[in-house]
Length: 291
Image (cartoon, rainbow, N blue to C red; front, side, top):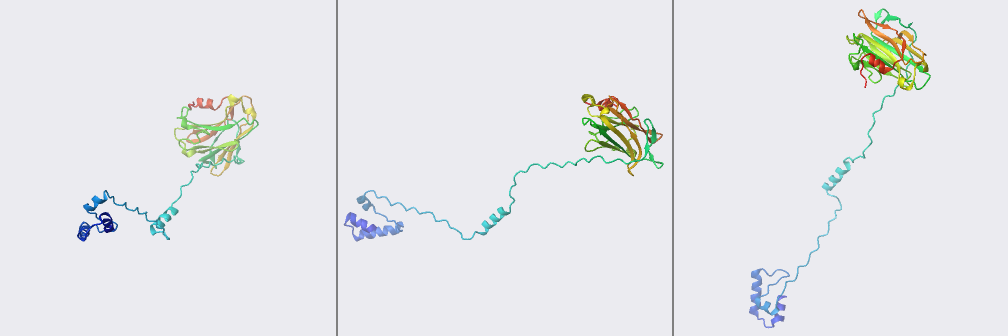
């Protein structure tokens, strides 16, 4: 190709000149395909000669594998087996144990008069586990009755507020007394382990009050009946019972009775008297600080 160009340009190129051109190509490595060296004498005749641009090679086509590589298969298997994120679930609320209705109280035992005192014993043996079962029936549904216990020291005051046991604080510090309420508000039980009572406690007063009696102008004339049964908890056998019903207008609290120490033994005094005071008043009397 280079030879044809030289012939057309000058028309008088001799063999010696051609041989020198070929020799120059071999020396300069210009015998590569698509390229040729042009001597200075020919460049002057042609003027400025620019080399032809290289053709742009298209990118190699994407190789499509008919079968995936082992690495690809392992990656896909990993993502398929990986646990997928779950949508956020609402928090599970812990199930609250439902309250049971008040069980019936065992019948029998000695019927106590108000003011009567008895030793807490069974078959001539000191009683260890005592349950005081309280049941009531209200005529006015606004009357909500509650039982409470005040564990008192030698000075007839609670050693601290923790020794006041009621629906909001159902166990004494020495774990000797436990309060239990029931569905429907028709009664409550007070479980007492006499062997566990702290030595500083000399007397335990049991009371039944009407919730917010003064504020709502409620009293025990709106209550049909109130009854207390002393039970030997180890045998679920009634020892004694006391009718506390008091339909007097203006009575907003009942003192069920007192458990007290006497000559190293526990006794029960069946007080059964009505009073015109509410739970807050009892707290003040026995030294419980309230807000």
